[in-house]
Length: 289
Image: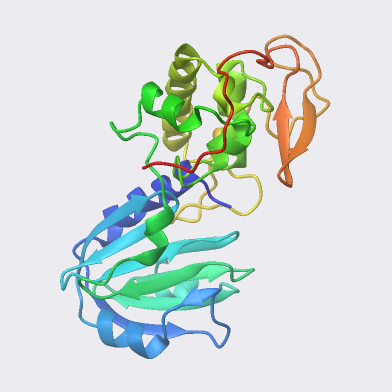
């Protein structure tokens, strides 16, 4: 699944080519996506409407239209948004939505597994999927003190804490592994055991790694391509993800893999230390935003 850097790269590519363009026609395949507004509704709201902005919240793309409507898109596991000449895109398999533009180009949503979402919200209608989306890691509202407060009292493993999109939006398995390696923290460390200095390091590395991944066009492990059909390059700089059994690039110790909440976690047992002492009075806690 594309994570924050990949979605941001796609957002920037789409914004550069689509903002100011008018949608002319919408067509769909006979195989709907996991969540998709009815074709008739999309046609009635999009046809003739001009795109004024492309925004991102977490892993969601928000297409802001001149009449105040918002087209929300989530790429799911294998979704791709691509812009190009209709002839060049005509033979692409697994295309479930096509939108023609006033400059002769076409925007298509390609999704092999059809887990993506395309939902249109009229002006004033709450965008329900965003209600559970946490703070963006680049937001000024995200500070080390805020993270420490969210984690206080939690026994939850640090890796799982970072993956909770109700707290931090957009982080996925690849970048959580890389962030924890860079911060020198073991993924099984209880989140509530971290000190303020630990959180300062986590936040610094989170922003550094995400920003670098964006500059490198994202990470292509399986299906990810940007809106031009190009792969990312950050996969060549991964320190631990997908490298089980290979030597750590820092110390040479073999990278290990463990499973947390059904997902593979990759880490260096020498470089990443498990914090066994720290905050006390462990309690359960719901996220605050």
